[in-house]
Length: 372
Ligand code: NAD
Ligand code: IPM
Ligand code: MN
Image (cartoon, rainbow, N blue to C red):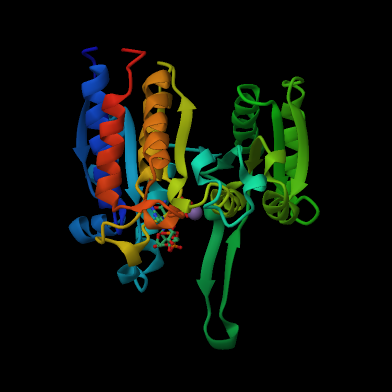
């Protein structure tokens, strides 16, 4: 296939660059194996943007992202920016790019590998075969609501944020959740705090209204505190979890532990479909920049590599081919090669780069049942 796809590569901070390197290795192997072709252009975001341009989302980075077919991101944030004005913290770069590209739908698949069932802190029988999709609203709620401020001083100092959702914002993410459920086991649990919050009461009403268009999907509602508990008690009861921005942030980190490590959890952030059928999209691990491990060739690159696989599937339609990346990962893990966070008895401890090399090599060696 000769078409070249444009990808904006934003490694970011902390462990971002070293895990991105592994995803790029796997992408090169993918190109070689399937004859696909990608044009990669790197740009700074987060702390890297503050260092190069004085802001967490430099204009050139946003322009590149807007002109690309997809964005592959690492992660942002480092202790060294903790005392900056909150408006130019690295994390603002991520929030700004999500907003600017209209990436309202964040998909966080939580899929366990059989060979890692003993790695989770939960009992193997609780986590074996886990397959949950968290659909998180990403451009609304308390992360973006106005007004927000910190004002006054001493005992008069106060700070506030606003949790606001409009009907259309809820409806569009609910539709993503229901469509997702339709393509899976047809069960959707909408998570809210409707016993307390007005925004959640609207959320629940809108989800119930959208549910009428999806009679095949079994829908239920759960309060977020109970959902946090149920995820640990009996995670297999969940197929699709649909929730608002902050609850999704928290529950997805919690859910990652069902797989054994936060280092295993990818994500896709998608915008609305445009007239030409395309949509803006950014792919990044669900985890952060783990700055305490940066530059040590130690952390797990799998979440980043799985984010690449999601990009190949969702943005470029390489569904079967991307599934081979997943197979390559599983094969290498089955062979016992592990980073520290997913180590187990009898396994071989390897660094970030070696795991990346092995996954790229395994992909090349898999019988290529499909070609593009
Ligand atoms: P974090 O996700 O960076 O790390 C939490 C813990 O998870 C780490 O201490 C480590 O034990 C583990 N972990 C994370 N990624 C791992 C990997 N690939 N391999 C092995 N272990 C891994 O969260 P944090 O420590 O709360 O935040 C650190 C920085 O990252 C902060 O600046 C925060 O704002 C930022 N952050 C960025 C993103 C993002 O870019 N999307 C997401 C979350 C946090
Ligand atoms: C995530 C992160 C971000 C979020 C931060 C870094 C802004 O935690 O992607 O999960 O809260 O959305
Ligand atoms: Mn998070």
